[in-house]
Length: 365
Image 1 (tube, rainbow, N blue to C red):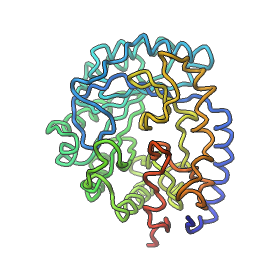
Image 2 (cartoon, rainbow, N blue to C red):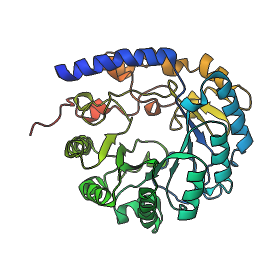
Image 3 (cartoon, rainbow, N blue to C red):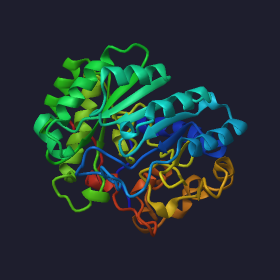
Image 4 (cartoon, rainbow, N blue to C red):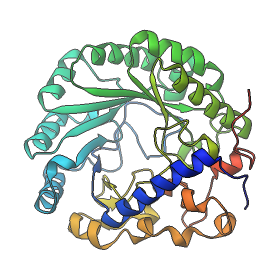
């Protein structure tokens, strides 16, 4: 596949970043560790890629099992450089969540959490802060009607709004809102931006739903190519306005929109600086990646042995030069897109450049 070339400015910027990325891949320092601590969830989100239920088929991972992983990591690297991200499911459904957080902190690891905000109260938030919380991410997928529809709960939007008010008053905590853009909410993103700015939200990340899990057959979830392009323009415009810190997530390479919709060029860090311990003990990279690419299991393997000796499929992307990527002139920068967009046999299920109509040039206004 041949795509229209990058501007000189973008090409120079991406070349500099490519050199930096090559060294990072070579060193593969573990900087982020996701812990899928539960599959229980108090919502039933239409776009969920996990097998999350109020009563999950898989029990919560015992805290001490995860702590053994942290002990292994601490023997081989500086624990202060590894940021633990607690996710699920909904982490706040664990009755021992504060103990989990405090223990992680006591072992010398900074930590943050991804939550839907439904169970967040002033008392619980203070307990989390006292347990060493550094950061929190809360999902908000539109204004009230759309968010509640997406989350399957009529009180979800109000809960997120209240959670924002709570976080806004807590000093020294990094926090942001993450939104999945869909066919239903794409038209209300400007109004949602106004809402977030008015609420004092410091940072906003936008993603788009990729076709896996419950979203695989839901046409109202998946952006058309035209709306995907509109999303890029919206992010670019919002960043230019400067009223809220805005970025597109690490979903895929977007050509000449790179460095306009993010502060950095696309770089899938899964298995390079990002690892995960999943609910069943599986050792993975990003928790959104298929089980076909799991690299081991903490109940059979030492995490750091796996991190150092495996993960080659993530760090050497030449195997991705196949199908539509085989002769793509952007592979140099894209490296086959996000690993979460590869199916079980290695095929790419969604190409962002193709979604931008194979032109991927920003609109000229």
